[in-house]
Amino acid sequence: MEGLRERLRRISAAWHQGVDDVFSTYPLSTPEGYGRFLQAHAQALFPLEEAFERAGIERLLPDWQTRRRRFALAADLEALGMPVPVPPALEIPTDDAWLWGAAYVMEGSRMGSRMLGKRMQEGDRAWSHGALGYLCHRLDEPLWPRFVKELDAQAGQLDEARVTEGVHYTFRLFNGAGSDNVASAAP
Image 1 (cartoon, one colour):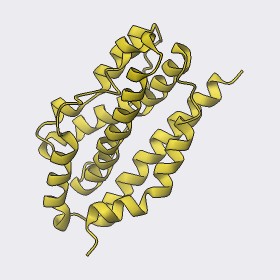
Image 2 (tube, rainbow, N blue to C red):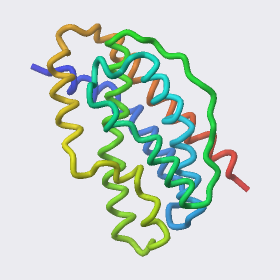
Image 3 (cartoon, rainbow, N blue to C red):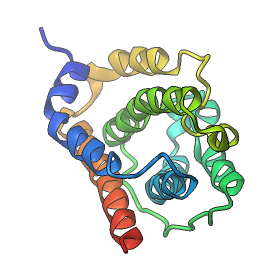
Image 4 (cartoon, rainbow, N blue to C red):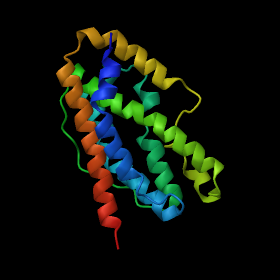
């Protein structure tokens, strides 16, 4: 029988691919390209993490303080000499199901970030080594397995339609931030 996580992965595959496609257009071989990539992430991540906190995400993820990445992302931008964006605040739903869906995307993005961070470390990009806090955030901790365990424990109590709405919203948020930043950086 297919569990909630497997259904979410299947349902969101196209949304996930859309975000990957947008962010794969950033040239990470230069400090400027990498900085624009980080700025685009910040446009979505900063207000979403802040909205999570106002919505009480710690009631779902008691280890939230170790999961949030906006401070590492801001430090990376500063290390690159790039402006740190100040996106407008978001108003999001506060029900558990919606928050679990949005958090599923945020926590899942950590795995892709880790792979990209390792490539940046291994590549000929010495300039990036002081700006990998976001991509390599808490690499040594099993944050995804702990998240999955908590999500699986709650799955039977959650309105799956609301979970899916949180997933879709978060993918759209990142897709929009990536698309807007690419457009604004175009010659």
